[in-house]
Length: 335
Ligand code: ATP
Ligand code: LTN
Image (cartoon, rainbow, N blue to C red; front, top):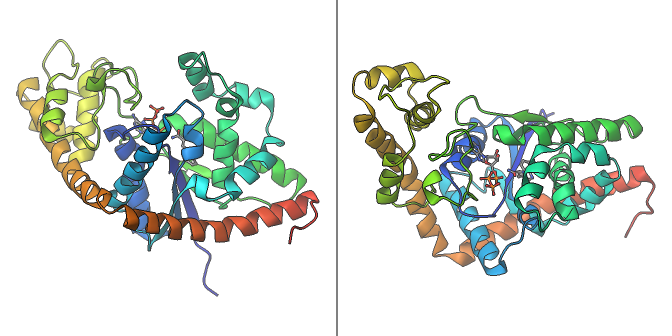
């Protein structure tokens, strides 16, 4: 009998335009995991999560198309992975309700993303923002995912998904696989170019703080030239030089060189040479992605076709899982 492969699942919100941080911290790893051929892969655009903060409907729809095109352009292959839009698969919110009855108020209150976002959106601390991690747990557990490739900031949410799975399994043994976060060593936390103590975030109000995957080469060069660095001009990785360390990290991931190699390459050369080199490496890294995305976006019918096929594959898996969980809970079977 063919051995069952382990499952990798992840999601990304269409809450804006994606940054270099999103690409290096998550999407690039999804593609690497897919290409390693060791896992069954499921990746989704989590539009249900995006409405926990107010979205303009036209923008949300457009951002969803754009993000979907970028995932394909980055190398996700619909023949090798199940790629879909979360709202096309009703099993996710169905399971989310069930899991919310196995999640404690206190657990959700401790989530740092909730605390953070409820401060940033103080006028709209809605229940969805609070139960966001439960829907994320449903995204993960419904596929019996073994690994969840995400950036460092999502570790706490994956831990909660584990706790929920363990609690459910204690009452109904063997219901869910207990997942693990899969966080890359490099690229897991790309920092803001304007304030290297904060992560690069697409919702930053200062557009010089982030590089977008769709930024033009001129914009990328300009933003790196303006990046905040430190008072001396040595290209060296150290805790007291967070600005230049972030640039070294980016250059290292973009070129595949080690930190030591990067330091050696720019020994005695200073930021004047280093910043344009980082920009150049990132421009070349993102160029194929940007060009392919623009091409894919011209053919909406093709994108919609890929979305529909992905959703169908996802529903085949999730409908059966929801039935199994409903049976365990004691619900009368629907026909
Ligand atoms: P927002 O700014 O709207 O909160 P975001 O930029 O944090 O959004 P998400 O959609 O929440 O993006 O995250 C998508 C994925 O990208 C997650 O796996 C997350 O861990 C990863 N990620 C986000 N920002 C970074 C970053 N600066 N460095 C590395 N990974 C990141
Ligand atoms: N919370 C994540 C997005 C997300 C996710 C998921 C990631 C939603 N569902 C399931 C991994 C697995 C974020 O904000 N980046």
